[in-house]
Length: 451
Image (tube, rainbow, N blue to C red; front, side, top):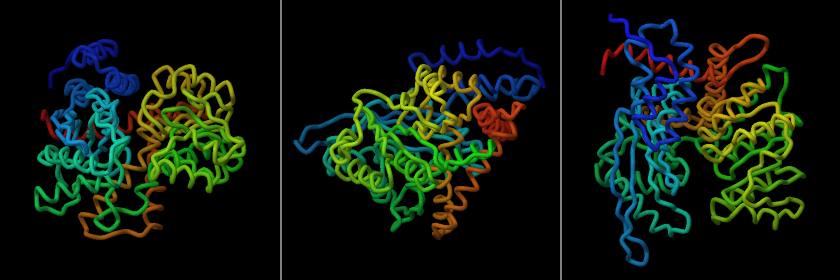
């Protein structure tokens, strides 16, 4: 085997930037992984000679398509849709569909790249993919959303399948949207297969899928705290977001004896010094999901709380923090504030919610810091279990699934320790997650040859 000249990290990243102009989110995701992988690969010639990291950082394919639909006023509307199939070395492409105005090819490429490592960490046979559209479901009628979903699936159906690519929900895509898309897939193909996850329980869905990402982030947080002989009992938590992940993370923290102080949305955050208990969490779920309301209205229902318009919650002193909203919501200065205020642990519920400056700040401070590819893998883990249930034509009980979720999060935590233990009681969870995920995918790619 020919020995190649090893390019250094800076040279590699220059190549990534050159090949992906105007795609800052994707470049950021690759940089965060490459910083750890280059050191790991230093004495492993086969990874260099086979250009493994370069190949993982180049999606297998990016499918882009036009989505035409008609609004309730009879106007023709045109959106753009994508499906990024990043890597299927260890299983069918797997990853969510996102409907949000911020969706771009760069955002979806970063999410598919992250998903590749996240899925590998679960131990389940799933590759990495992601899709979506710049369609904004907010303010749209149910029939408009249905027509858009049907049009989106009319193009997407030819690129997916139970053993090819299995999408799921994400921001802007919940059970309702999955239902509309699955119905259209079934109508076009005349097939009832597990081609989407996050389905309704009546037609192939899995118990605890809704709770899995938020619960999983808290289970991972528990595992981290246990390495210091601590737990969540009596600890204060700051959480961003108020959707599915945030509310279920809050719910699990309350169940484990913690006190949740904040939730947020794109308009700002609410701070409730009395604690956001189960009753208040239920109010938020109902208000946000069914009434499509804003988080600022929380203070009308619970007057002791305050609303902070246009701000993020990271200045509120806390023991633990869970960013559960969106990418790059926690910046370097926010990370410094959290550390200065005595925050002991951060568990990411969103995908890449901390920017590179923030990541470096947490690592330098040596606090317990879990990257999203490890801590928010609970959602895709239960999606993988839903795929298994669909293949077997069966459904597991909630107790079984809860235990499997706990076991998977514990397994990911152990993998992070294996590759991230820096000695002296410090575990670099970012490094551990990056190396563990990379190694599994890379070794499969080596087995297949140059394909």
